[in-house]
Structures are given as C-alpha cells and as structure tokens.
Amino acid sequence: MNFSFKIQKIRSLLKENNLSAFLFTSPANVFYLSGFKSSNAYIIITQEENLFITDARYFEKAKKELKNWDVILIESPFFKFLKKLFKKLHIKTLGYEKDHITYEFKEKLRTKGIKLIGFSQFLKNLRLIKTPEEIKIIKEGIKKTDEAYRKILNLIKPGLSELELRGYLVFEFFKLGASGESFPAIIATAENSAIPHWETSTQKIKNNAPLLIDMGLLWKGYCTDFTRTIFIGRPEKTFKKLYEIVKSAWFKGFEKAKEGNPVTLIDKTIRDYFKDKGVDKFFIHATGHGVGIEIHEPPKIYYDSFSKKKEETIKNGMVFTIEPGLYFPNKFGIRIENIVIIENGRGEIYSEIPLDLQII
Image 1: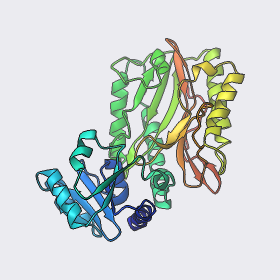
Image 2 (image 1 turned 45 degrees about the vertical axis):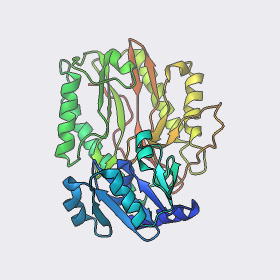
Image 3 (image 1 turned 30 degrees about the vertical axis):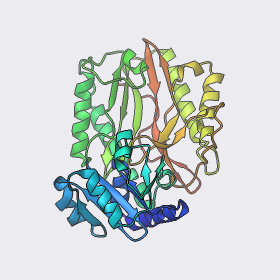
Image 4 (image 1 turned 120 degrees about the vertical axis):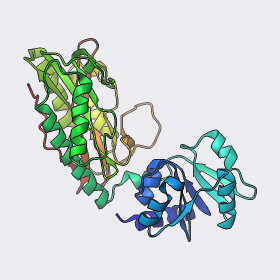
C-alpha cells in the first residue's frame, strides 16, 4: 500500500496548521499511516522525518517491515523518553490527538518550550476517502463475508444456541484467512432481534421465529459489516409485509447514494418512507456509518433537523453502510445491511447475498 502518499498529506496538514510535528497515539491511525498492527505504538511526523515508536515486543518486527521509517525502541520512563525525543527533533509546536489520549497523558506530555495543540479527528478528511488500494481490500473482505454467511446458513437449526452459531461463524472467518471479527457478531433469535445491539447469548434458536445476523470480519486490517434477518419456519403475513417495507426502505436510501448529495439525505429518505408507512417510531438508530480500519468511522448517515453542523457531501471513495431496521419490543426486529462504495459518482454494492427474505 502507498503509505508515502499519506505521509505527504500529513506534512501538508502540518504546514496548514503551523505545526512542527504531530504525535499519533490511536492504534487505528498508527495502522492507517504505517500498516503495522501494535497494541503499543506511536508515530511522530515532522516535515523531514517519520518515526515509528514501539516497545520490545514489536521492535524487531517493525524494523524488518517498516523500511521507510525510523523505528525507535521505547525507553523507560516513557514520558521522559518522549520529551528527550521532542527536543532532539527541535519541535516547537506539537499536534496531538485530544480525542484519543487521557487528561493524565496530556498533563504528562507537557514540555517546557513546546506548545501542545490538540485536534479531534485530525485525519478525518483523509480517512473519509478511501484509496483504490483500500477499496480493493474492502471488496475482498465483502466477498469473504458473503462466503462465511453462505456457509453458516447450512448450519442454522432450532436448538442451536446463538453463541454456538457465532462460534461457527468465527471459525469460518479464520478458515477464509480473516484475522477475526470486526465486531462481536450479533446473533439474535425471536424477541432478541428487537434489541438492535443484542449481546449474543446462550439462548437457543427458536423455530417459527426470525433470526437476525449482524456480522463482519477483519480482512488485511479493514472491517466489513453485513446484516440479514432470516426466518426459521413459516412467517406470518405481518412479518413478511414488514420485511418488504424494510427492504424497500433500503433501496430507497441506496438510490440517494450519489456524489453531491448530502449523506443525511439517505437517512431522511428512509425515515420519510417509514413515516409514510406508519412505522417510523420503530426505527430507533442511525441509517448507517462509515467503515474502514474501524467499524464505525465518518460519515454518520443520520439526519438531524436540529443540527447546525455543515452537512457532509457524498464523494467518490466513501465507504459506508445502509442499514434500516424496525424493532417491535418483545416481538421481533428486522434489519438489512450492506456496505456501499461510492464509485464513478454513485453507490455500488459488492455483496452478492440477495436482500429477499430467506426462509429456512
């Protein structure tokens, strides 16, 4: 992957913000800029240098893999080590991720002669638009997600617990070469499906009831997100009617996934449709979210008539979910979700799993 392009973008941001350097502390941004996974790593970018700082557990691997980086071993005490490094680099103004570090970290970071300037979502605009290489990886991940879903469909039966099915799913992820789940999969039977973020349990999958499966895998460091609601047994007319409403809502939202439209239009279109059908009060979460290195990234696909924030405009290279749902407490829920990639001015979907109701 072309990381030098990203580093050059950071250097432009340094210039724009009158910064000598920027300290990256969030694991997501460390990976985004280097492609290296570590539970304890930091990056410092200046106009001349890019430093990757990590501990002894990762140091040798990082030296071997990060050819265009100055890889530095963390010394103890940590903050004294960092401050010495700042002085060595002649840093006068240091940007940092104030939306990631603790107040205690910031206080310990204070250094005489260095002005600290905190930023929230410093890389938002950069990470918002995926590169062709990133999009290629996400497409591969979507294909793998489809494969895993097809495999577990053959295993679903009443009496199997939600957690057992999740276990089979994770096993399929690993068999396909993924590094794990992008989030803990939601397997929700019957009335559990009425809770959007149900915590998969030991409850047995029921017959003559819906089963909601919300899942995603990690492929080469990037997340996927996918939801289908299937039915085990014979669904009643009411359930089938409501399912068709959710499916139609998905497509109505998808039609608005075009370059130049505000992202909120997708959400508003779906809410207006649900209102027209008299079920809008049962849609209780945002329509979608960006997906990339993290499972939830900008943009947020949500219309708020009271918000005074400038609306995000849909652009080529954006990757986000569309996931309308209806939730009827103590009865059932229905959610359908696909990742949408904006290419050539419009949304494209690469999952090949139909949105039609699957009955087992």
